[in-house]
Length: 537
Ligand code: GLN
Image (cartoon, rainbow, N blue to C red; front, side):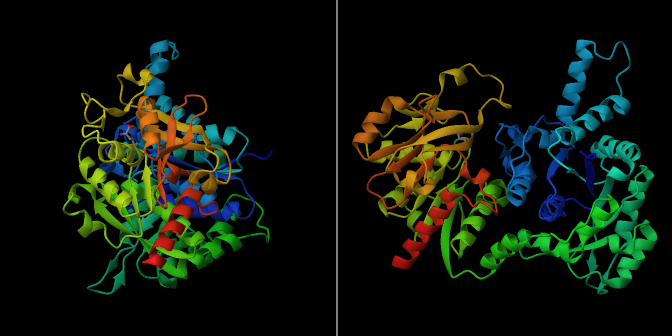
């Protein structure tokens, strides 16, 4: 097999320019030409992984099949490529230093002084090449988090310099930068980009391609100027104009021939085999929906929507599958009380209670679920949302007024959600939850079995607390159905309600597995149920 090709994506001028989306879009184009591609994210922060981070810091924590808690960009990679990622696809500075320090303690460095160059950079290099060395991928795209010039990013930039030198033709660098528009003079300005490229050059890296994020088209003159000042070919100056949806970015990149410029630089054949038919079909459905539904997303981090990124994206996929536009009403659970529930929740066609941790806003989630249950509004509870559904049922149907999760009330007489035995001994917070893919057996004839159309599924988990089987019988007698169980652990993973048109709580996170090519059936059917509700009201 020919050697793996490496593409590095760096960012300049500001953060949040969409490196993740540009990387995913390029990968989509290359994959649509038949290349096997994966994308990796290097995060310069010191945390070992984002698992212990508050969502307000970096948004949602994405979870892979192998149970890695990762940056949310990995969610985009999977949604665009329809291919699972793993722990190797996300590396942080914390993880790099931890490996190097572990080696030092073992005496692996044989008395040498351990330094950023070569020891840290060697470890970064090793992590970058792990994916290439599997032999599974022809092209590995590595996105470097942060912005060129950040102190934290220096070892990564230095590693890119070394790899570019070592790999020669097999490695290119794409620099994503901002071309601001000065409204007062009506001009697009290239100077920040020139400075940012200079800063890369000072680190010994000449970018091969510039992707220019802009609000207005950049035109021939700007292309010419950037090519001249930054030592890149004119056709390698790519415009990345603000798009209506992130899913349109591959098409915008294609119109600029980014894929061809990349393949040419990497000396890979450009055949006439680009297949974007399904992608364009998806975009068409997104653009021309036949009807709309309004779904409430009730959570406590709604001010930062990135906290629920995968859920919001799963609704986009499910909407397109139903040829319907899903309008999400973002509702703060702290605002919901028995008195205010009607004001916030009436007119909704569906209600999703989001995952989460801790006490804040929890009572509002319970009131929301009571409202959905009593008013027969299609309901989907995800992780904490499922646990809350069990607590609500225990309190308001079974009459156990103090029912709770021991996460919020360790002293409750009715711990309907409780820690598993093996979790009771756990002291560390990082990486110790039930994480990653678990099998789940579905109850024949249940609503959920109809949703998935099979009897065994695998879904990803990220939680510490579980349904307490001690109370299952009482609940079942009163109309709760445990319709999904973990075959090895016997844990209840899915609950439904008998007297309700569409009420599902899942202990796992279905949103992590929804992709453009494979919209998640649970979201597809939930949106369909919301559509029926909308049509009947
Ligand atoms: N806090 C709950 C638990 O740890 C639910 C976690 C979640 O929603 N991801 O079990």
